[in-house]
Amino acid sequence: MRDEFIRRISLKTFFYKDVVVDNNVTRLVATGQQAADPNIIWDPLKKRWLIYFFANVGGHSEIYVGESNDLLSVRFLGKALSRGSENDFDSVHVEKPCVIYHNNMYYMFYSGKDGVHSSIGLALSSDGVNYKKYSTNPILKDPEETGYLDAPSIIRWRDDNFYMWAYNGNGYNLIFKTTSDRFPLGWELIGKLESRFFGIYSVEALHDEEIDKILILANIFYPKPSGVSEPLRTGHLAVYICDEPLKCVYGGALLISLQRDTRSYPLRYCQNNVYAPAMTKIGRGRYVVLFNCTEDGDVRSERIYRIDLGVEKDQTLNITDKILTSKDYEKIILLRIPPGTKIILRHALIHVEKGDPSELYIWESSSLDEEKIITWTDKKRLELEKDISINEEYLGISIKGTPPISANYSLKITIRPSIDEI
Image 1 (cartoon, rainbow, N blue to C red):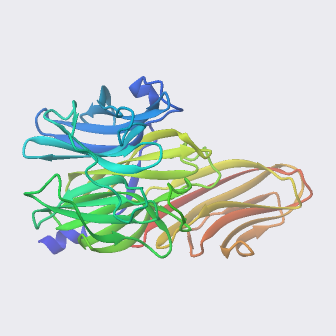
Image 2 (image 1 turned 180 degrees about the vertical axis):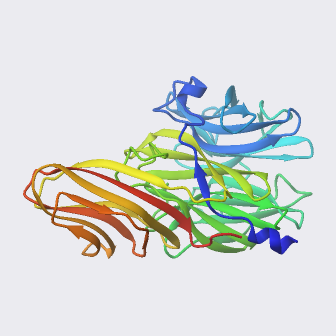
Image 3 (image 1 turned 60 degrees about the vertical axis):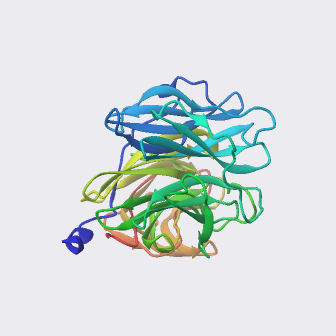
């Protein structure tokens, strides 16, 4: 029975185009449209979902909370946790909450920052809305002595122990463990979640008891960044499947950032980065994921969007934009595809409105020095009407001819991880 069920869980996704949380929901005077790093928990006391996030108001990040019955419409409740006083470890920012409900108490693990260092703090609540900080914060600092430990995600595993993943600033996550009798303290370092090919920033771990596996959604950065910092915001949303906390298999990306476009459907405003996932299970093989997008490289425009994971049918993304050439051969990168990810090009169209192109191209490439032509024309219109699997790292278009040439282009793509189902 369990094996049959495992085969029926797909990793297909459905994206909602409407924003779940931004300034229009919170009415905060937050920087840009900021509602960042969501966390979801079911409130068994009032039978509702609680959604936590942070926002920067007046130069300082603090943690807020809203409630929802459907994880689409959110009613803002207010501030859940304030930054600390001068000289506290969290005097500048409190961010990136992870809340665990255990023994009739809500435990909020969060990132506290003093402007130089980042450490993990703890706050407690009896109602999930009003939190009081633990008296001897921070409870956890980076054991590798980088001064940076960030974005905790915690699960309770079948061995009755708790496990935490936290970003350490070096392009990978540290994995900690504590026993149920020592929780919420007593964390010990036991391993890492890392890759040779890409950096792993914030992750969301979920223990699915029905299939007895851990699902991890990871914010990956490709190529791999270096240095102790938050990496440049060009991230993708990838999946790991784990039989044990230290035995995880990379499954590829569920969602990748779009290199140019700000008018894609349904993912408007997701041009430069998709990251900071939060996940909860809503039924057999069905999961809701809330995540952040940014547009035009502006990290202040963080809105919270929703993906459903485990749907039956692939969703197609429509990418549209315009181009005005400034040189004889204009090359446009549309996607840079992280390892382990399948892209199916369903349809493509380039249409020249003004100017006289000599050639139009749709191409893929393993490097930017040499393109592999998918299709081309010497006319003003190029259309591809059959499914093509993209096997290289880059997907793009090119226009050859005397500038300026004005053209519209549109593509329909499906993004799939390399593991189709579990």
